[in-house]
Length: 441
Image (cartoon, rainbow, N blue to C red; front, side, top):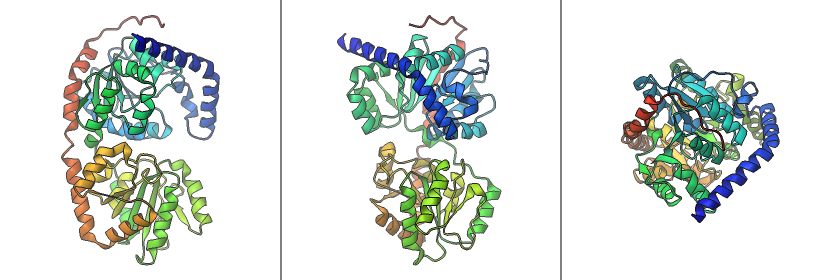
């Protein structure tokens, strides 16, 4: 079939390009390590090498891109660990922040490794060492070398919580033979929304199923109770709103909102949690250049009587701020990044606002707006108006929070459906014996 020939040619060219560009990729990883964007002690894992031995027996490999995807599969990992103790579970992620978070939260016995970059030698080395019996690929991690090498080795592939954004759909539409071949390698596709199912099927996935978004099954964001009590004392009843998971440009928006509201809202505290905490010093410098002083949590700063803007630049503490803030703005939505996770603050009953770009959670945002659980704004002026209105109206805040919590709670049984769908594949993985890997082509 012509499309298969085209796909094979594209994959061959991609693989050749990977081999030719490998020195550049390795140099790029070293530069990232110097900037703190890669873990220098574990850089070999990104190239498919590890000193960690593979345990005997069957191994299920779960692959998630970063923090959001890893957290979304944490409940699944916990259930698999409890209910199928004979399986070794291996989780791979690609970022330093996700590795740090998983080190604290993974159940005992679950192995974490950095995902190999999509170079032939790296993925081949990774697969030859770990020899997974089943691969659960989270959301949209459709790396050609990784998927094709796994398929050649006879690894069963399942796409879990599959997502295909509008922009990715348009981009993959220009390479239909290639994406059709990649999606055709999955023996089961579980989409997170009807829209994702339609797009995945249109691109070549065989009869995707839609069971819901695994993020609804995640545990509530954690909070250390002593620290929650201490921060409550620090705030001393002052009005507080949160700009969560912000991207470049959104911190300045939050600062402008603070300036617009500070006079009419005495004692206002604006908490900013950047999506990438390592950006905090640059954020603080930018705010200082505008005449605004920010306390940095990573440097021991506390919320004192004079604190107006507080930079909470630490990992794994969003649960604190979702519980403390009276109004939550979810970032990535005013900066055309598709928006960050709306489900976490919804589970905690927050009054939630976002910008216009919620394409990463498009259906969820539409449904939340329909039930009064989400307010969307177009710019900083509208954000200031909505934050001010909600801070002044306790009844409106409470109504939004109840609607958000009810919306999230009603969908929290998705994990049971996913486990039921995965059962035949997990059963097969449990009974597989050690096998000789076929030669690489």
